[in-house]
Image (cartoon, rainbow, N blue to C red; front, side, top):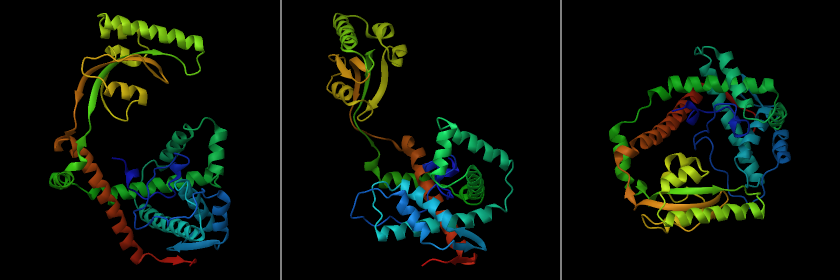
Amino acid sequence: MMVSRYAVSFFSLSLMLSLSPVVSLMAAETPSLPAAVSTAAPTAATVTAIAASLPAVVARVNGVAISAADVQRANKVIQSSRQGVALTAETQKELERQAINQLISAEILYQAGQKLELKDLDKQIEAKLVEGKAKFANEKDFVKAINELDMSEADLREYTKKDLVISNFVETNIVSKVTVTEAEARAFYDQNVDKFKRGETLRASHILIGVDAKATVEEKAKARAKADKVRKDLAGGADFATLAKEQSTCPSSKQGGDLGYFGKGQMVAPFEIAAFNLKPGELSDVVETKFGYHVIKLLEKKGEEAIPFTTARSRIEEYLKNQKNGNAVGEYLSEARKTAKVELFVK
């Protein structure tokens, strides 16, 4: 599993940039915002106003300053994950507190992480930046994204370095010591049996006569006519797999149209409705979706069934380990704060 699932990120920059390893603080570090009376999204101007009301230095951790600008950047990232929540006076204060707590925790971890050797750090930083930039259409979009956080590329490089150092520390000193036993996983399974059920699933094949959503009326009519002929040929005894390989525009044509097993919510609505109304061996009428025209053949139907422990075990262990990792990081920070010199300059 990747460290980014449970380490403490410096800013969770990937919410906006997808450049740094990212995680959120534990619930104790970042409690939920109180309910707002409005559903309007917080504005960048409001976030800037929060930072403007702060002193230039909001805190120090063992003598290292955390600035109002740092808080402003953190606020903007937290804001992006709180879309639809209005910033009342109360939520503004809570947002500010969350950001400062995150920054203090990150600084404590960063200072501890600096004591560990991290090979090829500069190369790792560069690789992360290259990876992140590649997710943007062009350099202009990349620059716009970091500018929206009031950052330069040099700032981003520094925060990426801090995230890598923090992640390395958390992986080496905390996460590597966390284990989940089979007995713990089994106990969780037994206590949550109702959560481990698989709904009704189908195995079906289809033949798709694809047509572009922007196709003309004539093009759509031609595709529909072709699908109608396919349906007629199948009803007349034509082999489904053979016809799928010859006529279908779906990649599944290579498997004779076989889509494998799927449950509800995995296919577009018209396709799903038609498929779940079939009996094994039956053909559907021609079904229109945004992809074109389909003829579906139901191969097999399975009712709701329990997922065995052997199948669910790996997911349970991952879930429990993530919980333990979060708790372990929280416990480390709680102890570290007892000896760290943390000075707050805001109420």
